[in-house]
Amino acid sequence: MKFLKNLFLIIILLIIFGGAALYIIYDHYNAEKKELTYELRKSTNGSYIDLTHGVTHYELDGPDTGKVVVMLHGVTVPYYIWNGTFEYLTEHGFRVLRYDQYGRGYSDRPDVVYNKQLYFEQLNELIDQLHLKKPVSLVGVSFGGMLATDFTVAYPDAVNKVVLIDPGYPANKIKVPQFVAEYYEAIHPEERALGQMDDFKYPDRHPTWVERYRPQMEYKGFRHAIISTVYNYGAQYNGRQSNAALNNLHKPVMLIWGKEDKTVPFTYSDSVRSVLKTEFLPVDDAGHLPYIEQADIVNPALVTFLRK
Image 1 (cartoon, helix red, strand yellow):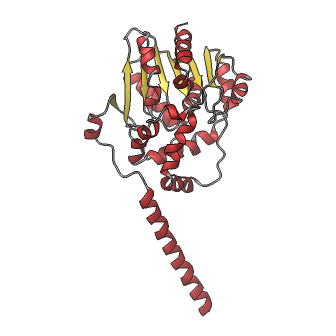
Image 2 (spheres, helix red, strand yellow; image 1 turned 60 degrees about the horizontal axis):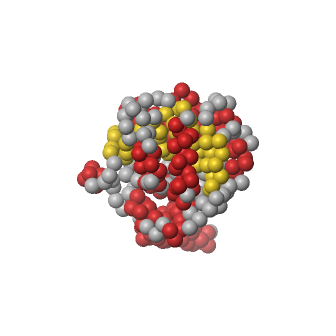
Image 3 (cartoon, one colour; image 1 turned 90 degrees about the vertical axis):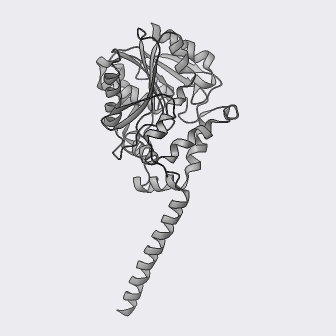
């Protein structure tokens, strides 16, 4: 009996010291020390609007009479990912909206489940509260392509055309509980930041990309937003089913894919096109962000498609 008591005491002490060690490691590496404030946002570009789940950072530009285009970024990089293409479209007469999804950039990070419905509500509210003329055209990259597809299927009357750029397709295989993934994310912030360079075929041509990415990681809630999205949206996404449902709506769809994409490999373009009729633009010499690496090819093609 004494042996069992001593063993139990040892186990309790190991749990206590182990927990303390895990917290010390977490506190040392955790990059999320700041809160987003009104004063901080005053010094940023763009505009802000208060929606149901919090403040959303956005930019709306282009002539009031132009066709409306809404740009949807990927799972982690906020709306600056559209720099260059956003300006190109506005200069060619489109009324263009880009925004930071909840949890990214300078938008609020609500402590909620980041599922399909949350993203639908944010986009619907933006379109309504900014009084954008419907139907709009959606342009989505990576995770934004998944969202563009699902949103169009859910609200077909709100969308005219869809552009999918290297869209997310395969479901992410979940191997560990969500809290474990969030802890790992907390103690490996550089892995997330440096991993953004994998989206480029020529990362050396974008030397400031990581430094531009890091600031959003300092605000509380970023990590939860990313991991919750992966677990509660990405892991449940059925690319074949979603694209087939979009195909049934018979809307104009353009598919653009960098041939040397390492994030969502080019071979998935065949899977998408097997169930979804699209105008297809395969882009040579480009990775996951072909509109950045081959802007002279992609941007004019976007304008031509959206003008039709």
